[in-house]
Length: 195
Image (tube, rainbow, N blue to C red; front, top):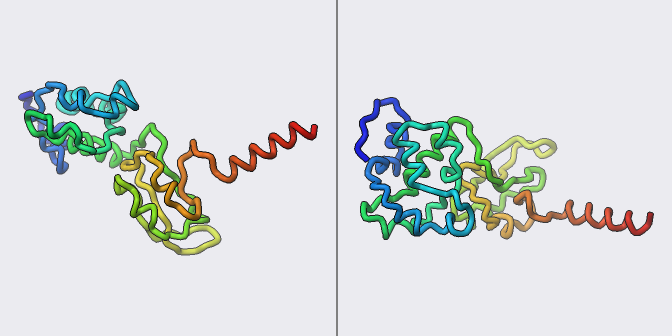
């Protein structure tokens, strides 16, 4: 793809972010798509080649709403097969960073922290393969200024590693069963038996 773009275009913004500089090098051969586990297992509409075209042609809104922007795990399974030796995950991550900088949020569920019970042990930080969690100082109601875990929704891939590691059950994915869901289900069952 050999395109000329203006200095303030979306394509130039992508190229200005580390990893995004490879945007114009893609030949759209499809090797990356054929190697991607996300397309096979999670999302059939996942298509890095389409996202690159959207960025090259300055289709910012389309790129930000494209599922591909939010699903790349940067596993780089595609990289060894790429004839251009492009880290396509770097380009996708650059688009995602621009989306997050503009206040866009992933359409997918991310982990959430219950700040009232988080003990800031850091286990979730250690196990997160996407470096999406950090310990930060926050003013929490009834607890004052304390350290708690904070999830970056632009990096979280909802893998559940943090939830599995958390001893205080303070970080969870919404679809998981937690203590409150179990109690609600028990009460529902008891009410149906008694009445």
